[in-house]
Image (cartoon, rainbow, N blue to C red; front, side):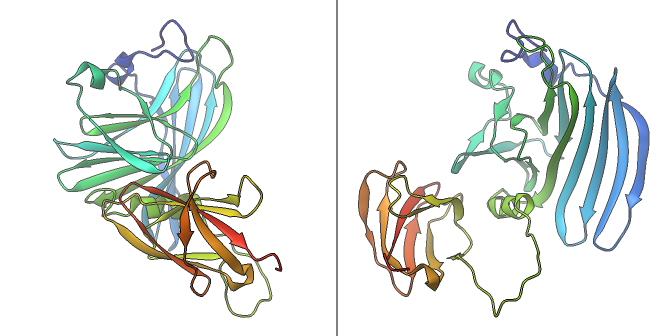
Amino acid sequence: MYGKWDAWDIKDYFTHQGIEFDLVKSPAISVKGNLVSCLDTAKQFRSSVVEQRICLSGDSPVITVKNRIRWLDKGVSTKDWFTINASKTKAFYDIPYGVIERSTTRESTWDKAKFEVPAVRWVTILGEGKGLTIIASSRHGYSAIGNRIGLSLIRSPIYPNPRSDLGEFEVEYYIYPHLEDHQEAEVPKVIHQVLHKVKAFSAKIDGEASLMVIEPQKLVLGSLKVSEDLDGYIVRVYNPYKDKVKAVIRFNHLLNISRVLEVNVIEIEAQGEIPVNDNAVEIKLEPQKIKTLKIVLNEKQ
């Protein structure tokens, strides 16, 4: 599978000349309940073993796949493949602050060179009104070919590090089957629910409160941080959908906001001041666009 420079150069023949793992543990139910049910299985390739736990939740269509990998073989690339029942397909990839469509065919030399391409957190393959989204926060190499999509789990090159990706690993990814495309299925919203789970803890408080609320929930919060000049806070949002979004961002009144400025991505050029009304601002965002806001607080907090 590797070329001259193992860690960087791979060849495309792995997409059609792969070797399937041997099943060493038949699928068996390990957890059965109203909230979650799981089955366990295990597969082996040469001296390496992958143990999988596949879980279904009672309140979500998202399937969780937990992999415990003991990898001992060098010079191998390992992929999990998924197939949808469709002949004509498209693939959509999550990129920083946006989504890009890539071909699933290999008709041109450009497309042939893209037998594996990167994505940040998810990839959707869509065909004939059916979609399948693979979500992974720790793995970023994907191959979408025809009606199949592959996720790279392990690469164990020999050069320059002969022990690269050898040992024991835990890799978790998610499978989200849905109708229509990634926008109608609200994939950007679903991946945040999956990857940023709610943590519950005990506390004595009155009522409820949020630091910030975005309404409607169409924009994605990309950053919330201190500004580079240490003179305020940066809120960066983007619109991953195909329609223009008009939204209101409401801040907790404890913040006591003085001004809100729209700035560029590197925060050095103000592009105008946005009116603040009752500690909230109204913004409009075109499809696939980013907006960076600088929040300036009153000095007396």
